[in-house]
Structure formats: C-alpha cells, structure tokens
Image 1 (tube, rainbow, N blue to C red):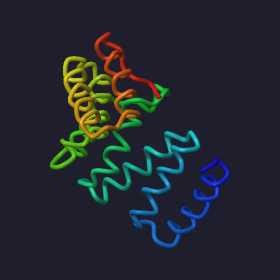
Image 2: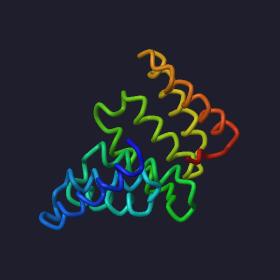
Image 3: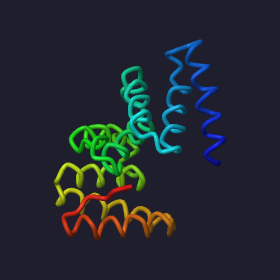
Image 4: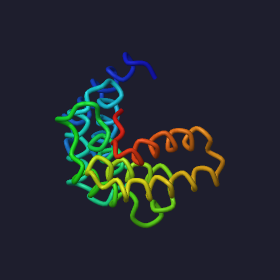
Length: 155
C-alpha cells in the first residue's frame, strides 16, 4: 500500500471514529496507518487507547511494544513500557510466536537488559528457522548481533 492510500485510510478511519470513538478495530487500524506513514507518536496514542479498551489484545500490545522499543525517535521509545506490552503480547500462545519473541527481545534491549534480549532473540530465531521463515530468521539474526554487542535495534 502506498502512502497516499494510508493517508486516505487515516481520513476515513477518523470519520468512523467521529461516529463511534470506541470502535476498537477502527482505532487499531488508524494506529497502523499512522505508523505506516511515519507518524509514530500518533500511532502510539491510538494503540494506547485501544489497550485501555482491551488490555489483553496481543496484536495491539505487540504493535505498541515494537514502536516503544525500536522507533528511531527517542521521544517515542520507552523500554520499560515496551517490555510490559511485549509480555502481554507473548502471553499464552504468543510465547511460541517468533514475531512476538522478536518484539520482546527488542523491548528488553531498549530497556537495557541485553542478556534477556539475546536469550529471547535466540528463541525467536530458533522458532523462525523451524517454520522455514528465512526472511524473519535473517532479520532476527541481525538484531541478535546487535544485542550481543549491547546495542538496541532502531527502526
């Protein structure tokens, strides 16, 4: 999807939220659209709102955690909060999801706990390799090398 399409989506999702401000899917999709066009702060605001309404929603928790852990802008990062939301995302079946564990590893790294970041990234890598996801495996391996050097990942 190109930027223009996301900008259109933002317009229509805002209109939907004018009608029903608590429409959780519209608000989540608005967060995704904001993130896609580089408006991380707005995305964080939407994901936080979604999680106030549905605090156990793993997908929203993971999306928020990823931005809080990896955003290029320091003002949008918060390692402690990222870990909290990544743990919510990884609860239950999420603990066997390599993407979820990748997010948790990034959150640990942003929080400065590189030992846990390395261990979690290794788990993510093993799961990604086991399911034959070479693209994710490559990405996780690159991040794992950063964590082993006590450096967080920036997106």
